[in-house]
Length: 467
Ligand code: GLU
Image (tube, rainbow, N blue to C red; front, side, top):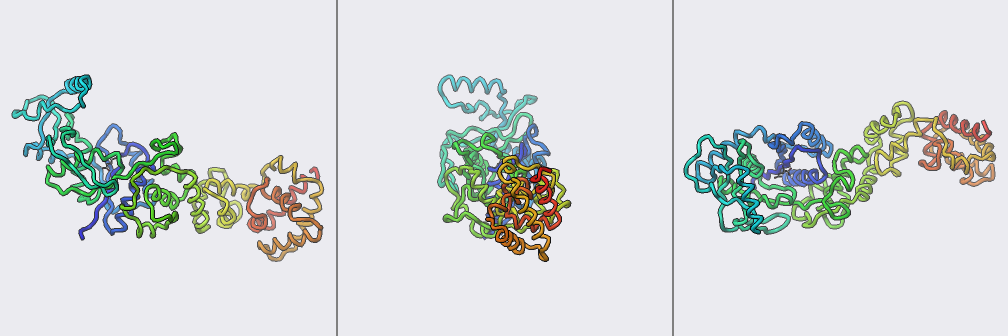
């Protein structure tokens, strides 16, 4: 079997959108599964809208997701001579023609057609011109067949056909000499020997035009797989109204790339009712045949659920690295407190995002927090003072400052004082972190260490005593 060659061909006119990322991912997975090649091609022929910033954002997004490419990035703007060559070839073979109609003339024809209730379409004024008109600007149009049918078997949507009658004589080169999208994409996919084109289904209508161009140029026609779009909860196309649509915005909100990849792949592809897939498993199990025909609905709660899963599964050291920028954003010095992986470990189970984890970690690094007034009213009452004192003595006497030893100390203290855990646990929690939610206090005490715990309990003790 010959090598499978896939590509992702974003236009650099914005960030990497979750829809684009999913398209890239499907291409990448299939390339990896079939041991083929994955090509990255930046479609920057629209000079006015393309920016270097967008190119960087797209590359950054792909790198973050771990979608490495084998060839490229290629830039269409480097290929103008190649496109020009192909225009000349079609012209010389009589498969394309110069169109001298001015934009005004075309607009007038369009309006007339609309007024007469006809579908606007190029009327072929220049299709049979035999002579060139020197000095007059022209666009180049592809001489499309007037009848017959152009059909393809979409790997996702099944057979699709179009009456050629409905297809216009497409402009392949504008009067300013620049080539148009449907033309460049064919030249590039052909010259890069792309075997399967996986892209968004907003391109379905372009496909017959492109197939006709492949045929006219004598190039093999690739297979096509058009991926249904992503919708928001209200079933309209996913947009900023539904929340963040940039992949990198999810990194900034504290999502892990593994979660994003797992989420995106399931948004349109399934393998039974399995939800969680490692990358290796995805490479093994992914297939275009199991991409659904209907649009996926973006569900932020499910993404959070997956992110929580991956946070919970990740190695604390790795998470600690990823957490550092989030802590710095909160003006926390990650070096100036307990060991970060130890902190992470106490928070993994309770965090859905790194952002949430960072918020939950701040108290470990700052002892000057204000107490939550509600917690103070409820738990920092004068009768707590002797319990705090007893706890300080107990903790001081511990040789081993481990979770289990600390837990045992609390149990002893409860027995000694004839109190329940509920009478010491919450006030200790307020003393340690300022409020009523935190990881288990045994874990927190272990991570803070004896000195810092002592400091914090003493501060609360002073406060209870009215100090
Ligand atoms: N550059 C096109 C886009 O961003 C993709 C073209 C294609 O995949 O064929 O929509």
